[in-house]
Amino acid sequence: MEWKSKTSKEILAEALFFRLYNSYLLQQPELRDNYAMLLQHYNDCPSSFKILNRHDLRRLKQVQEDIKHNRYSLFSGSLDFSGDIPDSIKTEKNKKKHKDICWEMVERRTDIFGPLIGNTITACSVEHPTIYGPIDILLQDDKGCAFVIELKSDQAKHDILGQVMKYFIAVSLKLNYRLYEDVKIITCAPGYSADCLKGLKGLGAIPTLISYKPLSIKKISG
Image (cartoon, rainbow, N blue to C red):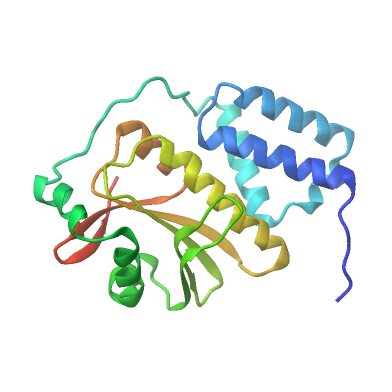
């Protein structure tokens, strides 16, 4: 297979896209400025955006539509909301080590993640290394989709968005090498703050509530 190196303009197009998508996922004030810079580069060199794969182009179109119709809101402050999470669940996390829980979930991956993912799990990794730190669990299904899974023993707050977004980017970079066909995120926590839940849904992630006795996860509806 012939290897084709990227041009400087293609590298810039990728960098501007990831910068824009990062600010979109985190709903940062510089979102419009990042979009303006990307649009300027597109007007100067539209062919450089051919470097983006079909998934990134789909995400870019989503950002463009949301900005065009003002379908986004910037985060301001934090409103804690954990739902009806029993106190017993909040204290059970002290009884098991984080890594042990990850391994148990992998060993029971078909029971725990099968109903959620809906496809056959063909590969799995615990503490999968990336340049941004280890991913708790990385799964791959029979359709080539990679699932980045992040566990939290306490209520998930806004800082989890930056964490999973970095993992998302690290794994998404491998899409260009055809190691994966798509990348999705699943979070498992006893509860979520309101802005965290909003951000995860904006990211297209699948937030779930985790229970320890027995170990299970449940997708948050709505």
